[in-house]
Length: 147
Image (tube, rainbow, N blue to C red; front, top):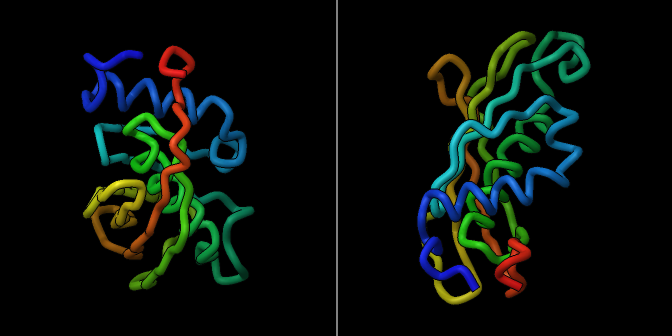
């Protein structure tokens, strides 16, 4: 077991990279993992023409997918496989065709196997959505050398 790295930025990055390698849905949407630390993650994504409605506004489901991916990376940054148990969203502003959306996830509380995370999604510094997610650890290691 790798204990010296646990809780470090290097450990969080290794966990994120292991998880990201098999997350073909997020990559297909053009999401980019910008930053990760224990309990934190930042992802970005450009709004493409296949992500908007007839008014060139980004679909809420696309914004939710970005926030959910940032939430997942932050949750899994501690090295155990963690899943969402609930998610709430408030949409405050629209995203537009061509915008680069940035999702910042941060851990609010982590007690035992349960966690609470907030995710803020912005375009050009303007907050467009706020998410609160709840998580549950499955107790399995993400990294092969920790298994």
